[in-house]
Length: 124
Image (cartoon, rainbow, N blue to C red; front, side):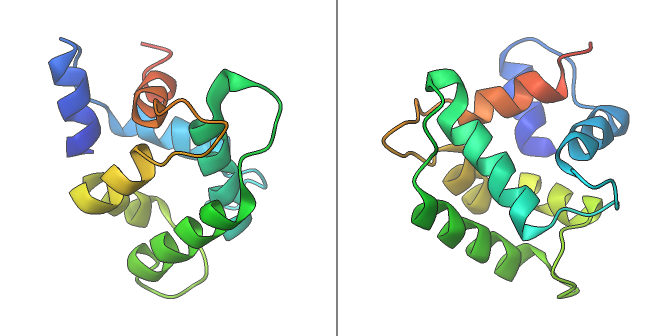
């Protein structure tokens, strides 16, 4: 979580705890099976890229391509799901985190990484 913690540090806030991350992870684990499916990952990305700009859906193809790339790199056991430890690797990989957090579509506002930090720390 070092990249999220860096954002928090720059804002004068304490680092992220495992409990905060797990609560965040569980919010996007729609069926409660303890892993993130491709569908759940796509929903997570759509929500953070599109944000509160409106009810219009984000462009589908770029998000599906991003999900495919993220799973190819971070689904290290090739289970077809991202487990919490694999998601933590994503949040610690600067290049992949940058791609995800700066992803943009016609409906987005470019503030995905700040939204992730806000959601993880919302119950501080």
